[in-house]
Amino acid sequence: MTPNLVPYLLYEPEESGILWIKFNRPERMNALIGSSEENGTVAKVGEYLRAGDDDPNVRVMADLTGENFVGNRGTTEGPDAAREHFFHGFTKLHRDISQVRKPTIAMINGPAVGSGMDMALHCDIRLGCENTRFIGYQQLGQIIENGGSYYLPKMVGLGRALEFAYTGHLDAQRAYEWGMLNYLVSSEELEQATRDLCDRIIRTPPMVQWISKRIMRAALDSTLETTMTLTSNAGGILNGSEDAREARQAFLEKRAPEFKGR
Image (cartoon, rainbow, N blue to C red; front, side, top):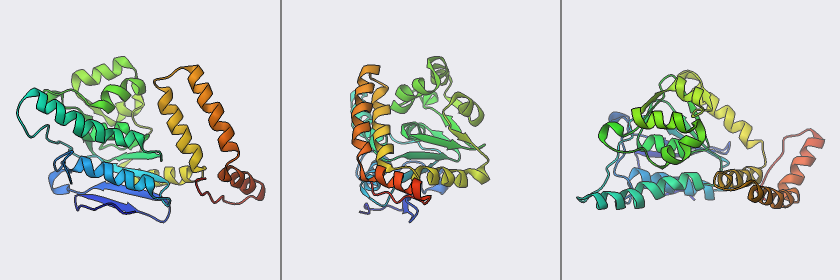
């Protein structure tokens, strides 16, 4: 089902199974239009992701980010009004990215600023190039958001995360060395590298990816014992799935498998 489209955020599914979500305001460096209100950029990102998650023809979602994403913080005055807008707007809508069951990739070809950085950190995988920069809101008197405050210490370690929190800027090379970027390639190779990764992802049974993602994200806040229970339960279910049987049969027949997500 196609969502209600807006011109400043593109929704481009391909027959290959890749869904591209592209920010489309180059004349304004891809700055956000609004945020959590109806038809605001952040709200539309959530809507597009949910539509892609529900589309059986979509296997992986690539979020083409990497410009100056600066959004508003509130429409009324006062610290608590700003907090409410932040929590019910950016926080919950950004969380939609991490809760999508299908693989999500952030392809970052430029500065990922504030909310844009947060969106990228909520994705599963990030690819960057020489143009990539991660920039926080520190210079504007604001803390980094949930992707930065929650996921960043787990990705790079507390010391490095705090260094970023104190300085608010990170170039592509250091982001790659720290582990924020899975891949660092030239800008000319960035889209092809993203497509190649999507192609490799699509060769794996989708249910394996969906369940692996749920378990690994849950394990960030869990124990070894709980994780062992989750993987043991999931392993038995997956073993009897139609896709698992198809994977085994395709391997024996030396052909490409045809997965159905069940």
